[in-house]
Length: 308
Ligand code: GLV
Image (tube, rainbow, N blue to C red; front, side, top):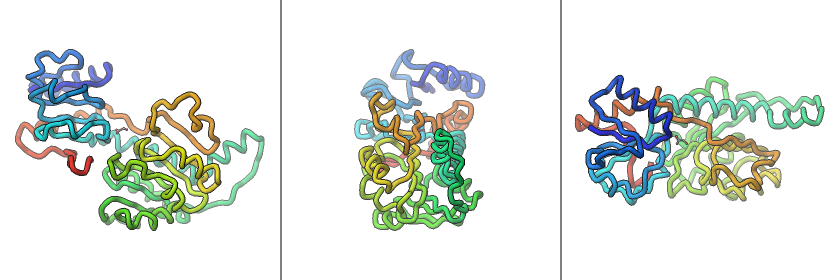
C-alpha cells in the first residue's frame, strides 16, 4: 500500500518516520520522488499537483493535511477518489487557543488599551462582565464545538449558527439563511469558523456586517474568501464595527500596500490559527487508512455535494 505525501520537506520527513516506526507495511513516498505513480493509492497534501487523477491513475483517497478542503477542485476528481478532511486533535486545540486569545483580548478591550499605552494614557474603560458579552460562532463542526466548549467556562453568553439546526448545551443556536440576521444581531463578538463553500463565500459582507450590533468585533479563523475585505474596511471606518482579528486573508501574504497592514482596527496574523502537526495527526491518518483497507467508512470523508 503506497501513500504519497506532498508537503514541505521537514514535515514530510516527520510523517515518513512515524509511518516507518508504527506502520512499516505502508510504503511512504515524498513528493516529488513518487516512483511508479500507478502504485500510489493514497495522497496526503494541502495543495494537490495539477491533474492529480491523471498523474495518479489508481488513487483512491486524498487526505487533506488541513481542516479545510476548499483548495481542492472537487469537480476534477473522479468519484472513486474519496476526499478526507484532517480531524487532527492538534488542530482543534490550536484553534481553541487562538479563538480564546482573541475573544479574551477583545472582551478585555486590549486593542484600545494598547493604543492608549502608545499615547501614555492611563484610563480605565467601562467594565463588561463575561455574561454580558455575547459571543457567536459561525460554523458548528468539530472546531466550532471545541471553541464553544472552552468559551463556556468563561461564562460568556454564547450563540451558534450553522447551516442545519444544532442543539448545544448552554448555546443559543440558529440555523440557515433565514435565522442568520437574528443570530448576527446578537453577536458582540463574532467568530467565523465556517468551511469555505459556494454558500459561504463572501458571507461576511456589507449586509451581514451591518446586521451585527454597533461596536461589534469580528474574528475570522475560516478563510479569507469568507470576508469581503472592502466591506470590512467600510464597517470599521464608519465605526459600526470596532475591531477585527484576522488570521486569514484573500491573498496570503497581502500586498505591501494592502490597507489592513496598518489599520488601527485590525490585528493581522499570518494564518497561524492551526497547523497540522504530524505528531498529533498521525494516529488519525493511520486509523483512516486502516479503515479504508478494511472497507470501512473513513472519518472526515467530505460530502462532495456540500463541499465539506
Ligand atoms: C488551515 O487553515 C486548515 O484548514 O487546517
